[in-house]
Amino acid sequence: MAEYQLSSLIGKKVQLDRGGPESRIGLVLAVGDDYLVLSTVNDGIVYYYVDHIKSITLVKSDSSQDVIKPITRLNYVSSGSMKNVFESMKYKQIQINRGGPECVKGVLTEIYDDYITIVLKEEVLLILYSHIKSCSFFSQDNSDANNEENNQEKKQDNKNENENKKQNNNSNKKKSRYSKHYSKK
Image 1: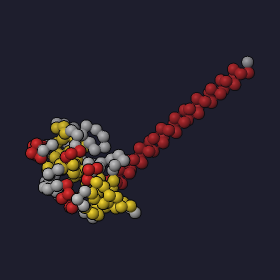
Image 2 (image 1 turned 30 degrees about the vertical axis):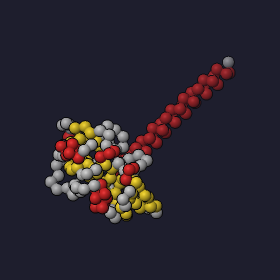
Image 3 (image 1 turned 90 degrees about the horizontal axis):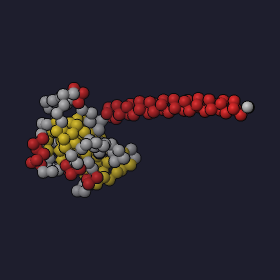
Image 4 (image 1 turned 30 degrees about the horizontal axis):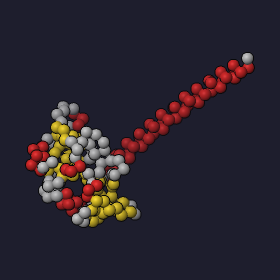
């Protein structure tokens, strides 16, 4: 997608991709040489490599839950290439990709022509630009909220699993009672 085509979306609410971990709804803030800047409710400012965007849908919604409130002053990189974006993120905590197995959260330490390096605990990751779909600053607050959300989901899954086990045990007890009853005759 050419920059001049995407620039017509600046200031409009869109959905990037139709589903999956990279799909987000947000307000297009800017378009760079090879990226698009999206302001989202949950992830804040997200930079998307244009080559990885599969579809863009204009969103016309009156739903108050996904309305993005206009913010008068946001700090974001709005010119140059994605490499300029990474330069502005150097030595900061960032998130590469939105979710799934390709999601990485760590400190951006180096920027090279073909890849970046991210430090994650005791590991140093080299990530090729061609495998980066999106990036954003990463705050521990967002991580804590996501961890709490995941913990709640796990608790609910465990509760459901325990209820299923109880039902299966009760069902097995009834079967064994009936089998004993019929075997005595």
